Amino acid sequence: MNGKNKKSGFFSARYLSTVLSCLFIHGMMIQTATASELSGVYYGSYDITMWGCPGVCSEQSATILGKGIKPVTWTWDFDRGEVDIQGTMLSVGFPYEIQDIGNASSEHNIARFTQIADGIYRIDHGFQIFNPNVGNPRADTSTTVSVTGNPAGTLTIKTIDNENNGSGDGIPGSQISGVFPMTVQPQMDGWAVSENNNDTGLSAQKKIALGLHPDKTDTDGDSIPDAEELGIHWQDSPLDSDSDSIIDALEPGESAMNDQIAGGIGLLNLIPGFAATEGTPSGQSVTISVKDNWRFNSIHTALMIDESPSDSNSQQIKDVTLGVPGLDYRYGLISIGLVTRNQALGHTGNVQLTLRFEEKLSAEGQLLVYAQSDRNIADSFTLIPNANWKRIDDYSLRLSIPQNSEWNLSPLPNHDFSITVAVAINTLGGFSSSAGALDLYLVIFLLSGLLLVQIRK
Image (cartoon, rainbow, N blue to C red; front, side, top):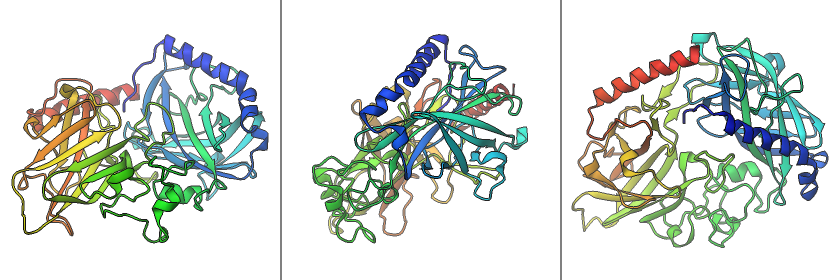
């Protein structure tokens, strides 16, 4: 989740790619639909990357200060020349907001954009971070993007390198200097789909709200169209044949009928199979199975952070280790509720759960598994010892949790066993599942201080 210095080789390749994309953008649009033909409203999301430099940005001096903790929605109206861009929390621990110029409008997330070339648009907007330690600074700026389309009707929107004087510095975005503690450059890359793309009878917004792929007719790829798997009462109660809380349109094949297998679960509460940008956990999914006399009753995924309003000076973090170099919670948290299949049979032994991730897992020595230990305290995550979990192959973990352990958050309504887990990747080293919490948090505290000093320079 945390940025690393990028050397000149990286920027040379990126810069070349940006130049080529600008040179050939016209040809790309001829193959699909030219930007001049775009009209109507497009709905989608983007990921933000915050670049920073100690002075004037260059290929050698730029650093990724942080990224958005999740993709955020934006809505493009090509007839009005307006784009509604929502903000979120940056991984360094504070929220940001995209505004209109001067932040004068009551609809302050709506910015104006202008087409400056075929497939090239300039968004004029305000940018503000809410960090009281540096005075909640804001600035008016512009971001230039390229817009290309594919035959399915989805737009790909990428920030290109365009400084106000017409030159480039090799980094996507435009420099904002003299306002923030460092020179910063927001990079916003994402996608958008036309509201008229409604082959299932659903608008793009409704499809996304249900967790469905915005430009596919069969999200889970099981050859049964989403429209059929949603059922006739989809508006009030989309079809969930095995009552595991995952609708049939998201569960592929037989898992939609098997209450001991839950498939097609989008990590971070995002759409499976759809990523706004490369290199993010967006679009990844997990399949969970349970053994013995248990069945799934509820499953949901979420981030390891609770967002606070953009005008707030506070934030709620479920785990104090979030956002610190060394621990990467790229899978977020996974909450699982189980009920007994046959009350007469009862239960023996530990609850065994297998989590199979779509993305290849890190080596076992780099993995840590946390679980919430108090259902009333959001940040009560504690390490699960190695004796209670195992990396069984490159994609799968198996948990064996005692029913009477601190991680069983039941009794909860309609649950006999409930657990919330978070798989962390240890990228720094030095932590182990046998380490005491005090030692771990001491290391985290020291690292946090170093990070804060670096940002304030």
